[in-house]
Structure formats: structure tokens, C-alpha cells
Length: 543
Image 1 (cartoon, one colour):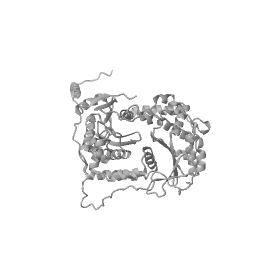
Image 2 (cartoon, helix red, strand yellow):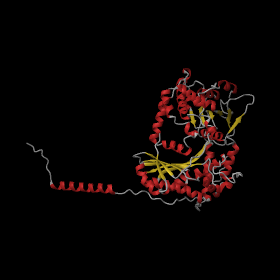
Image 3 (cartoon, one colour):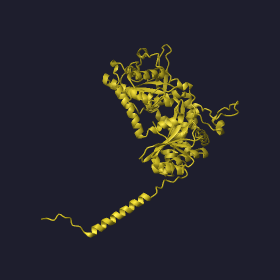
Image 4 (cartoon, one colour):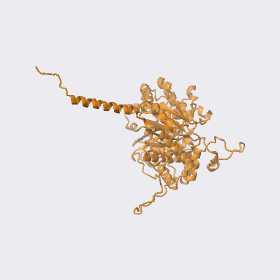
């Protein structure tokens, strides 16, 4: 018989024992090793004053000056009572439109509400997208495949871009705003179950992706009673939404809106527009709405949009097991100005109070100037201060960016990015250090020149894209900026000096910033406590 008993030798056993001992020793050492977090460093700035090499004969770029001609021309027809303001693309275009086919006609119908935000715009956006899908199937019109929708708190813009006649395109857009468009079986009713599913799915996706941090940002920045926090994320309605409620939301928005119709240049093919026919196609709006819906659109007029007081507090959203920390840090700037720069920014002194009140409201131009220039200086991607220092020099992040949110009822500057768990404290301290530096140390003239080139170039490039042209124009309408105001803002940007920028920074970045972090709390608290001992940490759960 064959012996199946394994043969053993003494030496392999010794090796096995030795290896086990080494592994046990390594594991023990790992368990006892203390994690060393990234140290903080003083902020560093890039040099923008490097001269051209002697052998480089390339000419220097000149100052970019945006054209003063309006992008759209307003058509006025006094003999007709048009329900919309008609805008034509200006006859002389400075640039080639890179976003659309020259053989196609782009028609956009925009509803704006400057005084108050639309109610439940997040619901309406998904519902209108579902309506476009239903219409495309029902009518088999290829033009509907180009449907585009852009929704903000104060504007709803629907667009179609196709070779058809503008009157036909206009007729298609009208179908989205008919009083029974979501219900009437003859006009492709929407699938309400699918809309509810998408709303719930978006909520779960936001929690999974970390977008919930932006919801908390808005709540802490503005306060729970601010209109912007009351018209979004109605979870109860997400669960119970029916076609009747959806139609009421649509009708409230339609009645609340000021309407703007954007047409291509009159010289374009198939661009002759029938005004009389357009009036006949205009939807007949209902005259009454449930009180629960009509009240919300009036709340913004009665509510004083005061800024919640920010203290030295960092809000933490727990995301156990995450390998990075999401960071949101910034200021609300619509009611903030420093006493030391009252005269510099141009405010009048209240004689009854003997000086500037602590919460004097900046003009819309001053808010826009501060918001645009400072967010770009600090966070304009590759050439911003934060990106250069915190990524290029120190490797704390893949990217950090600045966002200027200039809306009718609130304006703010937000800096956002993500960092590794072990870099959290150094990353937050790095941002705070730069915000302090910009208030105490003037920028170099070379950096100011680079900033102007970026801002002016951004403005010129936006005119090469039909979507950006309309968005920029609608934003001007909702914030109350006229074409003269825009030209004045561009002139102020072109005249920006290091001293002026420092004044703007002291006005916008006064007080304590709002800081919200989302990450593995148990792992980041020791680092935050060490690097930011004067800041209070508060755990927050997002609903």
C-alpha cells in the first residue's frame, strides 16, 4: 500500500515559526504606530511678475475689453399687448457661436421671478423633463429631442434648437405651459409615478455622493426661514405628489413669472415671427390657487433677509469610512461692510446714527464686484491662490475652487474642495490663512493684471455660447442689473487696483466664515482639535 502520510521536515517548521513571529511583530508595531497628520505651513503666493526670457520674442497680450454692444435687442410693439418681452439676438455678432449649428434656430422661453423664488422648482424641473419625453414620443417631432431646460430659484428657461420655422418651435414650447399640460391625455400626460421615483432617487443620490453638504450649507448660511430654504426639498410632497398638485405648482410659477422670449436674428433662415399667432397660442392661466401655494410666493416680500451670526464653529457631517473630507467654507456678503472702508466703497453716512449702521446693504454693483473678483482671485482653478498653494505647492487636494453665488435675495462666496482625511486640519487652516492674508497684504500688480485678464476673458468667451449668453442675460434681469450697470461693473474690474481689492476683501471677509465638513468624524476630530483649538466642533445630521 502507498503511504499517504505527508512527510515533514524540521527546517520548514522553523521557517514557518520565524515568519509567524515576524508577522506578529509587524502587526503589533502597526497597532502601536501613531498617525502623524500633515503639519500646517504659512501661505505662499505665486509670482506673476516673471519677465519674458530674452530669446522669447512673442508679443505681450493686450488688455481684454468686452464689447459694450448689447447681445440681445429688445423689440417693442406698442400696438400689441404682448404677454412676453421679445428679445432678438443682436444683428452684429462679434464672435462665432461655438454651441449651436448656424443652420438651426434657437428659441427660448424664460420665466423669471426677481422678487421671490419659484415654489418647488426642483419638482418642476423633473416634471418638465418628463413632459418633454412624453411629447417626443407622442408627436415624433425630432425638434423635441433638442429640448433643454435650465432652472434656478428665480428663472425657468426652456429651449429648442432645430432647423424648423421659429413659429413651429414656439408652438412646441407653449405646450409645456398649458394649464392642463401634465394631465390632459390628448397632450401626452406625464407619468407621475416616474416623477416621484426620480425625486426620491435624487435625494438618495445626494446623500450618497455627499451633495447633502450643500443643503446644510444653504441652511446654515441663510437661516431656516429664508425663502431659498423653504421652496426646495419638500420631502413630504415628494412622497405624496399627484397630478393635480403638480399642475398647481406649474400654474403658480406661470402666474408668478415675468416672461421673456428669445429669438434668433431676424436675418436667419425661417426666423420671421408671427406676433398675432403667438398671442393666440399663449396659455390661458387660472386666476386662483390654493392658499398653501400662493402664500409661499409672497413670503419673500415680508421676510427681512438677515444674516445668521457666524461664530467660531465648524459643523461636521459624519461619513464613516470615507477616505476624504469634503470642505465648504465662505461668507454671505449681501449685508457685510467694514467701518474702516465705508468711504472707500462709497456709502453715505447715516446722520441720525452718527455713522454707518453695522449691517448696511451693499449695492447690487458692489456685491457683484466683490463676489466676482474675490472668488476668482482665491479660487479660479489653476491660477487661483488656493489651488496654487494647497495643491501645487503642498499637495493637500486634487482641486479647490471658488464660487460666486449672486442671487436677488442673497449673495455669497464659497470655497469648496476635498482633501484626504489626514490632511483635513491643514487644508482648513490653509484656506483660513489665505483669507486672512488677502485682507492684510496687498496683491502684486502682476497678480491684479492676471485677474483682470481672467475675468474679462471669461466675459468675452461667454458670448460665444448661446446658453451662456441667455443665462447671463437672465441673471442680469433677476438681479436688477441693467446694461449700463454691467458696463460700469466691467469698467470697475478694469480699473481694479491692489488697494481696492484689499478694501473689497476686508468688506466681504469680515466676521467669522461658515465652515462645514463632511468626513469620518472620529478620524478627523483629533486633527481639527489640534490645529484649530479655538474653534468649536458640532456634529450635524442632515435630514
